[in-house]
Image (cartoon, rainbow, N blue to C red; front, side, top):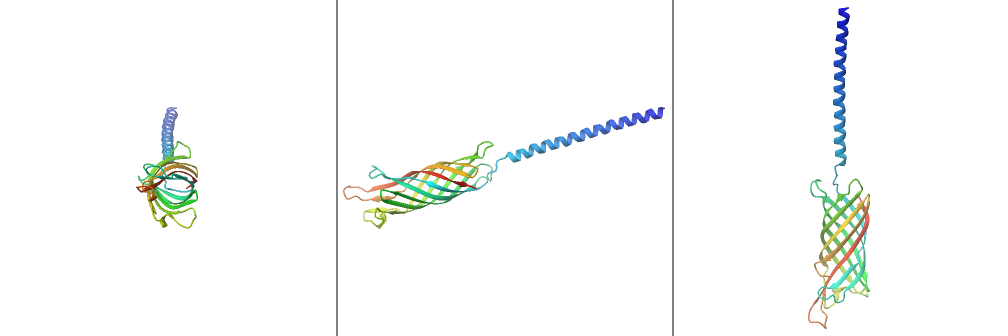
Length: 224
C-alpha cells in the first residue's frame, strides 16, 4: 500500500512539473509570437521613402510684362507636357526629395507665340497623410528655360527685329505644392523668371524696356 501511495505521489508530482513546463513553454511561445507580430506591424507601418516618376500635362498661362511700368503687359494661354523624377536625398530617413526632369511648353496670345523647353530642379518634402494613400509635397526650385518667340505674322521671331534684344535663355523660380493619391497627380505652382524675356528699345522713349514673364501652372498626370 505504501508503494502504491508513493508511486501515486511521484506520478502527481511529475504531472504537475510537466504541466508547469508546458505552461511556461506555451507562454514563452505566445510572447514570441506577440512580439514578432508587433515588430512585423512596426516594419509594415514604417514609411518607405521610395523614388518616383511623374508624367503630367499642364495648363500654364503666362504673363509678359514690362518690368518697371507694366507697359504692354500681355496674358498668354499656355499648355505643356513634362516628366519629373523624384530622388530621396536622405538615405530614406526623411521624405526629402530632389526633383528634376524636362518639360515642353507652348504659349499663345494676341497673335504671338512662345515655345520653350524647361529643365526644373526642385526640392520637395513629400509626406504621407496617416493611413491614407494621399501624399502632399510642397516644393521650391529653379527653372532653366530655352525660348523661341514668334511674332503675329509667324514669319519673324523677336530675335530678328532691330531694337529687340530677345533672350533665348531664362533662369527663374517656382513655388508650389503637389498632391498624389494612388497613381493620380494634381499640382499647382507659381513661377517667376529672374532673367528678362526681351529688352525693347522703343523710339518714343529714352530708356530700354525689360519684359519679364511669370505665371501660374496647374498639372494633372500620373505618378509611379
